[in-house]
Image (cartoon, rainbow, N blue to C red; front, top):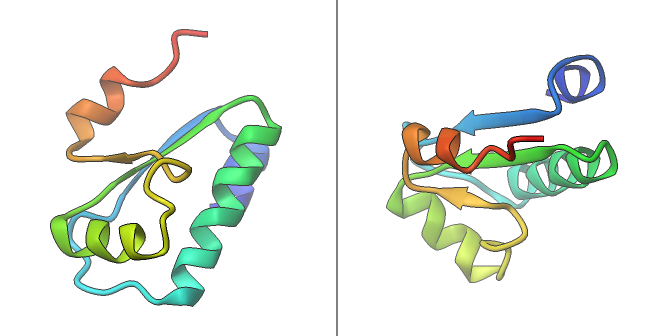
Length: 81
């Protein structure tokens, strides 16, 4: 993912809707990727399911990590420029 943010498009959508569990290491990686996207003036949106969303909310990162309920919603929220 880091390489994608370095070399690829400025706007990335990561679909985590099929995973059942995320721990502090995974959350740390998502925070690093979100910061990297901000630095590059891009966006990094994460599609989640209720279980992942609950974990992210426990550590109060839901706004910073730009959680989305579906890929279609995330695509609609990609900045136009």
